[in-house]
Length: 377
Image 1 (cartoon, rainbow, N blue to C red):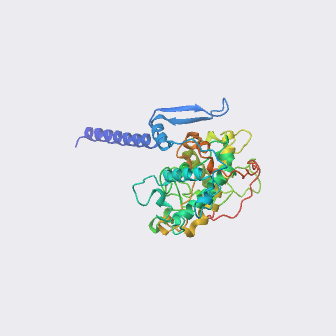
Image 2: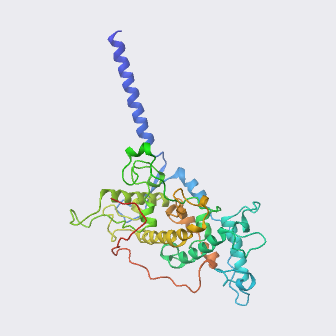
Image 3: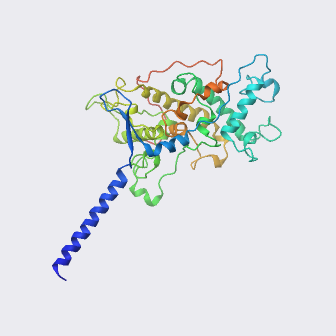
């Protein structure tokens, strides 16, 4: 063949390869506009939040607030629920009117399909014998009510700054018996792919860490256990700094999860000039600090303690419970349900005699403790 033919062929082939590479680069690394930036931090520090207008409607649909009736005042002359109904252990202090109202609301929040014989009241009660203890979901619901009481009082620094927001069953369940965003431990990589895996099950992309090559489970050490999250040194070349690169990557995986769950960037809490500095961080970082402690308490004190109650189909593949993380409540917004004042309409979910615990200091050093976690180094 003539040399001219080969020159044209090489040119066209090279052009096609470059075009395909450029298209792949654009598709994978860029987000389709329109993107808006809103300043959220200190002026002049570029602490802004980036939103894609195409996704706002979908996020709003996931955070629709249900219809709420006005709260019923507690009538001291009305009989208590424990005086009228048998075997009421958690909400027996409510008036019978308040008790009936909160039971109906819980049915709507968790088992809304009244035409399904397994839903509505029957989701937690034996039909015809509401006092029976023969269904495991009744025990779970009882423990969850205790959990909601604790969240709305002890962890008010995270959920109830103005005394009216708080949490209800709907904050997590959104009309489902099991919340949409839960997690459990996962089996290790299958044998054929272990040759590419390293400690922390890296190189197995998962949505929790943004499909990056980070440890795939940032929840077990930090949201079930209480491993130390902060790994940044206070000074360069600090002596006795035993933090490893893998620990940094594990922490980064958790931060990516928090960022995605809340629909925000790193600068929502941190000043990128100094991620570790509390003085230059936003107040939201303190709220997040309390939230991490709250999630640990939920997973350990209220969910894992029910492990023996759950049937096998309500456990994870390794036998642990389905636990919560930031996504369980937030679902893409930094204030669940756009800060709807549900607690104002359902004061039955706060124990009137319980007082909030003293707030801890987030900037104080945290001592790492043993955790049910894989080794981080």
